Image (cartoon, rainbow, N blue to C red; front, side, top):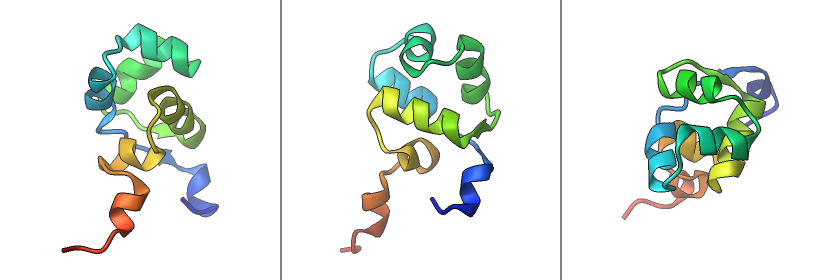
Length: 82
């Protein structure tokens, strides 16, 4: 993500799936990421989040932030297609 993109808001359509794969409740993820449960509920409901929230969520889930947005890691996007 470039410098210009760092000021924007991002949808995290894969948050719920990744949270469930990590076997975490919304409350557990909120605590691990240092955000409120309301933030998790809103993000899973389609509300966009600031980049710093995206980074906190990715860190707590131990995934690349691109995975929350696109469903695949950044290196997956750059890999040659077979």
